[in-house]
Amino acid sequence: MIQENVFFSLAVALYILAAIQSLLYYKTLDSQHDWNSTQLLWSGIILHFLAIFFRWKLTGYVPVTTFYEMLTVLAFCLALVLGLARFRISLPILNVLFMPLILVFSIAALVTPHKELKPISPDLTTPLMAIHVLATLLGYSYFSLASAIGGTYWIQERKIKKHQVNFKNATFPALEILDQRTTYYVGLGLIFWTIGLAFGVFQAFKIWKDLPITDPKVVSAFLVWVIYASFFVIRWGFKVRGIKILVLVITGYLVALFTFLGVRLLMVSHHFF
Image (cartoon, rainbow, N blue to C red; front, side, top):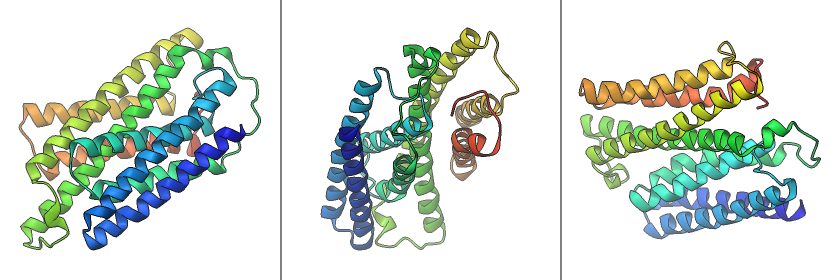
């Protein structure tokens, strides 16, 4: 437990430093700050992984069975997809837009009580349940990334239309590249979300002998799938591009966020988090 706390606390500290460096880059456009931000991010990811590993070693099963563990793993997934994305696209503002989200979930996990390991249902510790939770968290993480890139597209397009391109947003990639990356990450998110839903439905019938279709978390989870599936139908079937299609990306992300946090805070659900 001590090792887990130490590694996780250090990871959060590195994420904070990475966020500061990303802001310094955006202020100065000095590429050294962006490089520092990404290196600190990856260092945090490694320590974060070690924290999850020690939690796994302590519990004996994939640590996704409590609200604290969900927050911890979600923060890790968000950091991981951002780190991987920076290998594929040169967009320093992603760190600026994305690091606050990572910090919110990381700090929330830090302040969530988790010291006592209480007995839980064996149904929550199965590999299938772990796949359900992990795939869903990765899906949400990629939706978050797509929304961040889509937000960058929106900013850049507005600046271009108003002829207000300055030395900061002039460093953004072309709108076509931002559009392609948004679609790519929505696609990855939809794949993982679909896997999560499929395993969730299977587990529901296995544990509850039924799918609680009136459960608010189930309803919102399927609504997310419908929104992002509609994104591809509208984009490829009706050839819609630009801000109009980005509305679906942002809406889907907000519904996914509500699925994780809003339902838990405001509604009653069969789900344990």
